[in-house]
Length: 219
Image 1 (cartoon, rainbow, N blue to C red):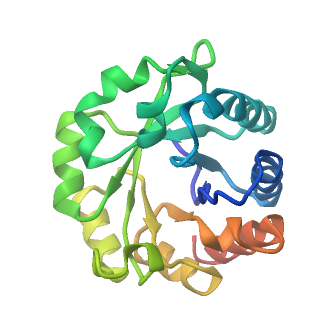
Image 2: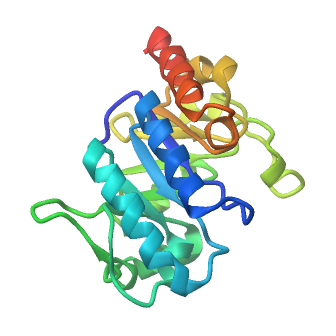
Image 3: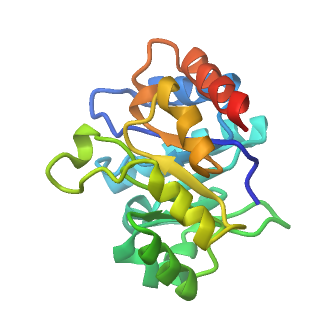
């Protein structure tokens, strides 16, 4: 079960960002209150992944924050790595057993499974196939990465999802900043997932702290 309100920070896969800078930014975000981390560096060569994941996993475990690997990253791995879970997409949902073979979890801890959904109906169907722990629902607001691909849903979809799946944790994703975080929680989200709002901030720690504070006002 994930802590609520959750702040799920997703790494931004910037080729110009060094490994040391990535780890420092994630650690800074955790200090600010991030409760989950997703490693999404899908553009990295397969040979570069294990060492970086190992370092990031160690940092996350020291802080007691779960690290999930993006499903696309898991597909590229050539050897098992330490992590706490996988964040799946529609195209690899049926490969969860295969992908989980690339993850070494802490003894006694079950593999955590997240999922990227874009509608309530899609999420319901995914839950019928895989025992997910949580999902992101996106894009709630307009975001550059989805422009011209998927129209923003607006926060009302979070209310629809809460009414349909009242006990299942759903995190709002897409165009969320401090001014919108509380609106998502009020609409029914169990937390928020962000990329640019934290990873592109001058201070990931301060950005994470402000998002957490905004959610707690509503929660």
